[in-house]
Picture 1 (tube, rainbow, N blue to C red):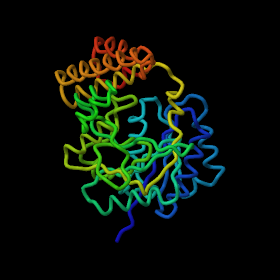
Picture 2 (cartoon, one colour; picture 1 turned 60 degrees about the vertical axis):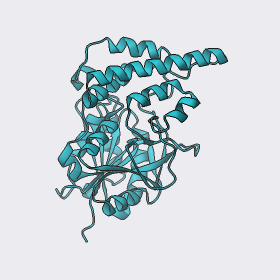
Picture 3 (tube, rainbow, N blue to C red; picture 1 turned 120 degrees about the horizontal axis):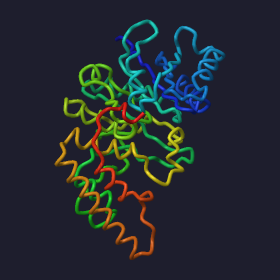
Picture 4 (spheres, rainbow, N blue to C red; picture 1 turned 30 degrees about the horizontal axis):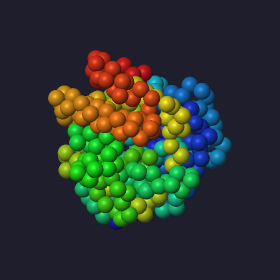
Length: 324
């Protein structure tokens, strides 16, 4: 049996030291598979590309094409940056069987990538295999999800237990699986992707600058008959939000609202998108009423509902160039 080729993609934006740490962990795990690594610097503009290229050469990783460093001319976002890697071949010019998309702040445990490949090899119609993710504090991250829906928007915004019990299959986050299982989509922190599936459905939609791009890709795959799997035997440590700074932001950036709206309109149409918006607003108002009665602050970021409404009134754009 031919050994599958695996090409790992690390997307860097202004975090070269963290990316090198992730590269070291990925290379150690990929060694048994004979995998290779592409680091894409997403137009950081802070000397990241030069630092990465210098360190990769100094560590001997550039020999025989084991690691390549690519400079993107523009920062087109998560999907556009990863698409540069998804267009790459192995160093011997062969096409990879699998692409391993790994966040630059994610560090695979031993056997992580092998478990994902093993699952995909055993399930020919599986397009994605995704890892169990935990933080450096060993707290498990929720990474198994259902596709967003009108009901999911209402339930997720309301955060009321009796509504959750009435619509148990609506929330986007799923109960944390303990066994390998099929999911609608999973976070792209550690995701093995079948190349032949991408040949059929295409890569990431570059209209999404950040957020919803892996959800959209998994939905397109599902509609074409491919499945996504959560594989808890594959484990990574993920710090999270290092390059985006979202851990310290108190207000959602405009590109989150852009991505959310594009996802609903693209995949379900404008009427569905408007209905989903009103469902979220209704749930959000219930949450605020409950929070006010209990004397608690709402759990949403600052100005969230106001920003959601304001953004809904802005012109709908589909070009990723508008977001640069």
